[in-house]
Length: 620
Image (cartoon, rainbow, N blue to C red):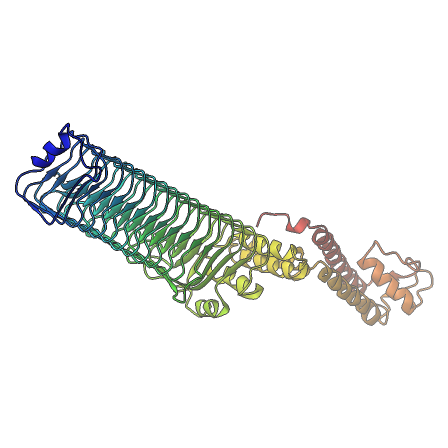
């Protein structure tokens, strides 16, 4: 009561204000609605009753190193710094032990090393707090059992930095840190944070928060036994976000780390992070926007369910998505029934480099699920991808687009896949995938074999896309080889004998239209056969003679007769000078020549069709 009376006294006060150190205050210090322009410093004091500063308007305030059962300072206005360094507060207030709801501090907020314990409510409740300088909350320890956050900063506004490094926050009934709609005009540091929370709200919650500077949770450890570890849906950060070395464990369908529809203008780092959820994804980033690169080298993500271990559906990454930057391999594991990576409709404006990845999925969605993805640069996937149960699909790139090079695994991976029995062989879904240049790493032969052996059903588009990529670099012969292989695969899908016979004929004669010169060679063989029939059979046996006197025909006349009868388009001058007789043998020769003539016309037709591309027109 004496302190209140002094501050309200009309007598002039010492400009140095009120200073009290090491005292024990037995009554309640209640400065509600008090206005004072001098500093108030009550340091290393012990208060038996909660300190009340509600709606007070004070100059610099310091409770540094003091022990108290509560601080009620809703609506407090401080024209300077508020220092609670080393404060010890233990109480049983059902709302909060330390309250700064709606407070306004024009200077800095010092809460370094503060220890707050509350068995029945929140520890530090500061919704709508406004700090015009930096808020130092590093090494803060808060323990409580409340549906509110152990540290609650919903709607708070901090013009400087928010420093929460090395904090230890525990809430047995709700979030450890609840800061929805928080706004920080500078960087926010939560390195080495330890947070244990409970419930669906998350252990650390930053939904719809807006941080103008960097956000760092490097080496932080977050745990929630019944919800997400880090809930940051709609988060906006105008610079880099560092989650390097983050260890986050959640137990909920929402996943361990949620960045749904978050927007990060700078780079997103997840180097060496360990994200674990036993009921949902390790990382859920649907609709995530990242303006810089996304670096996930050494990431260990474990999830369960159809959402995947890492989910980036509809995300838009302006920079690279890369696994580089760490010596550790990336491990993506789904222990439920779903993919390791689910990134349908992912858009990346640069390269996607998934090298040294060990991905394990389960179920029909496949291990790496990227249908409809759009990648403006290269797509590189290396390491291993396995589907443990419920299906054999390990890569789904249906209707995806890669603007530049495609590199999927190395030859060792593919050789091992090809060596397995057909019923155990891993499967690819590639229908609609487009890319510009030939696949690297595996090579044309390996990739072609992958199309033949690892696609669950025949589809012409993957073959044609592969051929087109070789045409783009001028490798026309390689393109034809691939298209011939496509026709061979198509032949296996035919069922009617007539279709099979025609298809096989086009193979033998013009190689499905891609080798039309073969028909000309066969035509030459027919001409040789016709010449043989005439010179070896007809002329020596008197079956081919001059019609006037019945004399034998000369060699050139015989050859001319053979060529002209086989190909009527080629009429020799000597034609008409020799004629087959009416004998039975001559009639047999005539029949043979008719057959050879029909075959020659067929070969000519096939040659023209193959040369002009008509034989390749069907969509098969």
